[in-house]
Image (cartoon, rainbow, N blue to C red; front, side, top):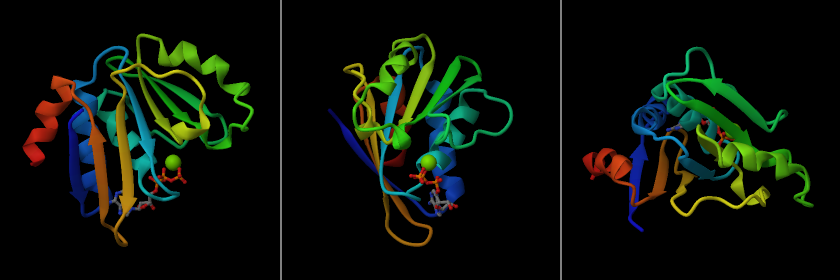
Length: 151
Ligand SMILES: Nc1ncnc2c1ncn2[C@@H]1O[C@H](COP(=O)(O)OP(=O)(O)OP(=O)(O)O)[C@@H](O)[C@H]1O
Ligand SMILES: [Mg+2]
């Protein structure tokens, strides 16, 4: 698996990276976003949805767990932060992960749903007030072609 490390210097840069990946996303793709509170997972997701062609604002689905948007493909934004540890409540989420849309999951560690082998794993780290490091693991050519430009 290739791992890319990208530094962003402000919120817009994180959103733009998300947007570029959203623009090339394909049906069935799944992303996981790991990182502390305030690392930038939701801002990445906002950009990603924009790149997928979602019109209007994308908000954190923390209280609803999942929000569904219509773009070039369906966009499923999952925030598993509030799922309880039993893993029972998240069974309904498999239909999204296995569906024809594109799924982005914040707090994937709270989820017990099996994820596809080609899931793109992203870890966001806060380096400073506005600096973030994104580590992105993927071998998918449609994404590596975007990420190689940053190297
Ligand atoms: N380079 C950056 N990239 C992303 N966000 C940044 C950056 N610099 C500053 N920020 C700020 O950091 C915060 C990130 O918030 P965001 O809701 O995206 O984080 P999160 O990882 O989704 O947190 P949570 O775990 O609470 O859902 C925002 O206040 C944003 O303005
Ligand atoms: Mg969030």
